[in-house]
Image (cartoon, rainbow over all chains, first blue to last red):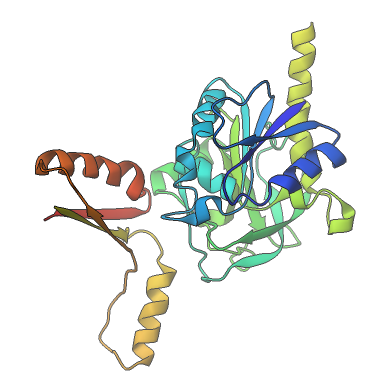
Length: 237
Length: 79
């Protein structure tokens, strides 16, 4: 599988994503600079975390105008898998690939800690390898991760099982105390209607080795790899 | 010609920044404040003499880029 990891000015989780994909998961992964107009021959795109364009105006607002985003829009429109992590989630929302917006944390504090995630929908290319009832222990590191959407959008997300992950406590209970940023409905990650584009605030690429405190992030990347492998087999057949 | 754009958080959106400023103002002795909304102010210098064209273009820019309609309202003034 070949992954494209986008690089905007001030992306800073791009190397972590490449390391997790190449060195831990044994996949092919390459950087794609934001000025590129083509993604090349890739199977999936990772929009990594960071502070693209210094978070000027709004987080993700300016990255959306980078030339490479036109290629990402086309890739997504043709059914390609796109995962936005942290700032990448913000970029995908600003680009209109995912609904809603990410605003300042309720606490006004930058939160940098491990959280627990409950997976609500296993029928997506981002969650299919996560065992039922498995809680993911994954770090967050953001100041603007409070998910907001209007009521109609939120109803649609719920009705179509598009809320992929919720913040919960170590017992799997979705409580207000376990919500690190004030996100509506404890939302940590969602996907689009077609289920080929997803975004989440936590950093799975920082949780792919026990040495780092958790390897649960691998389950998200393995979920991505699983359908891609299937696709390759069917292509070959 | 100059355009002034004021962007404020929508009423339905929780504004912890506004709340924090309100609390601090209360601590300074400013009572009687119902709410504070912290937004953004942009001043854009224009060389286009056509006021209506400038307004139309900036209105579109406000909707598509300068504000995020999911969470923000904007006001555009040209003078």
